[in-house]
Amino acid sequence: MKKLWLVLGFLVLTGCSSKLAYNNLDWLIYWYMDDYVELNDSQEAIFDIKLEGWIDWHREEQLALYLAQLEQITEDIKQDKLNKAVIANHLNQANEHVMTLRSKIAPELAELASRLSDDQVIYLFAAIQKENKEEQEELDEYDSMSDSERLEKLIENFEEGFEDSVGDLTDEQKTMIANAAPHFARTRGNWLEYRITMQNEARRLFASRQNTEAFQQKLTHLLTHPDDYRTEEYLARRQANREAYLSLADALVKTMTAKQKSHLLKKLNNIIDDIKDLSLIHISEPTRP
Image (cartoon, rainbow, N blue to C red; front, side, top):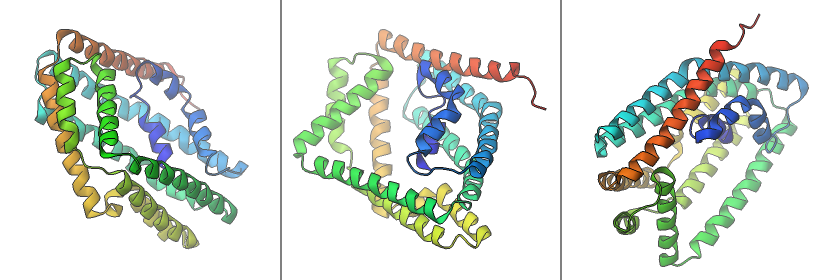
């Protein structure tokens, strides 16, 4: 289920490849779902109808919102208006897009989940358990690293992330990242704990899914209220990391060169053009009977 939202969230965030992903979304979702559950013909027919509706809704109602925000970000960059508060506002808007997506899909996803057979549920949680084991192995490997090795890896990840947006970083910007990195709290273990907590709750719900209405309501709540399953420590660390990220982004924006700004604007314009193309595709599609 998490991967379903990852695929949908991918729609407008991958530059020139977003059109290809969007127009092949049905195939991509089935490809991800195959790792967790194999639907029978009746379930697949129902899911196809739901999926078509989700994609139509997203194209008709959500793309325009993404477009408006990206155009605003572009103007903020051109007019040198980006600062910590503005960046925070854009992050909040992006989170609202995600929550809107969750709220739209979760009830229907819960209804579909109530149709799974016992064997499908067993397969689903076996696949999830296998994935958890792999995540734990990666976490153990990460924990085995020294503090300096973990810090070096974090700095490398930050540099790669910012360079993907603005191009090559200056020595000054690399120093800023190196100085900021130690202030970020580790949350990988918290995330895995949260993931397992949610899955255990889902397992408990599936065991009592004979009460269809109650099951759907509770599963919908689980899917749309992730913070309810995060510990206070995890929530605090996430908030602290958000503040640290905003401070770092604010500092880096103030030192952007003309070349970096041009690189970022070009990247944003490519995504904007993709969204406009997708919207035109929708307008030109024939009305379904």
